[in-house]
Image (cartoon, rainbow, N blue to C red; front, side, top):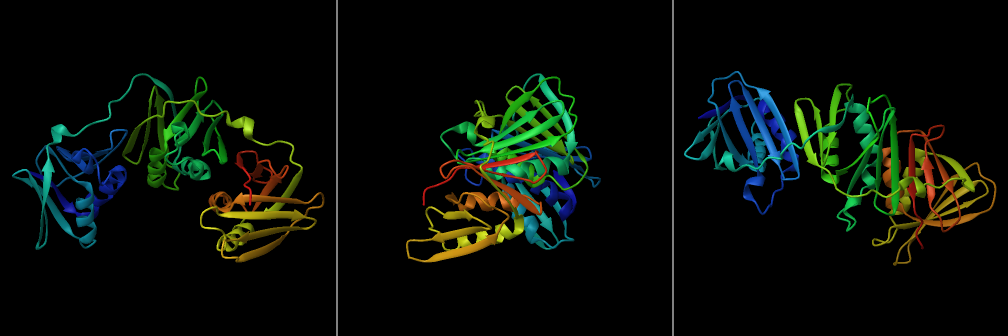
Length: 369
């Protein structure tokens, strides 16, 4: 049974699109595989980890047979990558094995029954459905995704809160030490406000697949599930069932001290200071006084770095510590020339925003140094 015959990239591109969620080591061996199905002149690929499923398909005009098979996603992808860019290849199923032929090369891969491949079942009625461009959704995720928690016992933090309203789409992420909020203003035609928590893995995978293009993305949200479709790719993910913290309450208001500084200048200054921070705590001191912001770092080996940035500030001095990684993350993911840094007391959170805009807020808690 011949499933595919044609150019290497015709198969490699859709395989790369679905294989990002495949776990290399899994208690169920079949979850390391990708499902390949051919029906007439269409080849469909599916990968899943039980919680998330990614589907895509492409047209194949070369002669072939209808059928389905599963094969190791990693091994097949590695084989295709190792072939020349312009290679012609054939995928054929023989005696429960898949044979990959290209020129004088032959590869024989083990297969598992397609009937045993698990699928994510579609849930019921759609509670919200809307469209936006790939570029806009990718930018929204870029502004907040780095603040998601990683394997936190508070499972609802291991994801991104998506809030859909009639006039805006908001994305919120926090790990308990910092909080990022981004808002995209647009008409979504959503009947009532909908809030869902997308798992971390689904967010990072969608972000990887999205392009900086104006083509549309279809988003469907329903009870316990989200479906995001674009470029012949559909990602279907279970949602995190939990109550996201009331994030608006932790956003500081009425800052005592505000400075405006060049984003790139501050980023490079912090990158240099981070070299001599403690490996464990990654702390830097930010000392604000008339006309200058000093960044100071040190480590257990008695080494120290000092950097100074000129700022338009007069007022009561402040000495406050932060995890430098939290500051680098936000500066790395913004694309503005300047940022506004708002400070309260030495033991209270600070707020980073974009001058003249209200669509992005980043709250970071201080640390003792």
